[in-house]
Length: 137
Image (cartoon, rainbow, N blue to C red):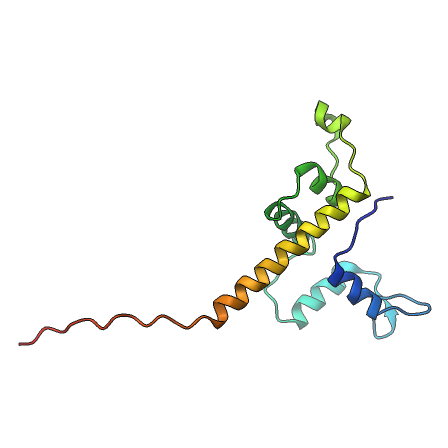
C-alpha cells in the first residue's frame, strides 16, 4: 500500500464527483476498466497531441523537482524502487506521510505561482517597437 496525498484541486474535483455507491470514473455509466483505451479515447476526443498516460509521471516528477521537493520524497511519491542500487542514504531515509503532504503543498504553491505569472504576462500591454527612421532620397 502507498499513501499519496492529493492536491486541494484534485480533492475538490473528486469530492464533487462523490457518489453513494459505484465507480467515480465511468463512461456511459460503466466503470472504466481499460485505462489505456480510455486514455487514448480521451486524448483523441480532447484534440490533444498524442501522449502516453505514463508521460504524466514524467511531468509530475519534473514539477515536483521545480517545486523544490527532495529526490527521496519524489521517489516515494512516484513509487520508484531502487532495487540493489540503494545507497546508505536511501537505506536509512524514511519518508512518512507528513513529508509527502509537505511536498504536495510545495507543488500547489509552485502551480499557483505559474498560473499567476501566466495571467500577468497575458494582461501586460504588448510592447510596440520604436519607429525606425527612414532614409530620404
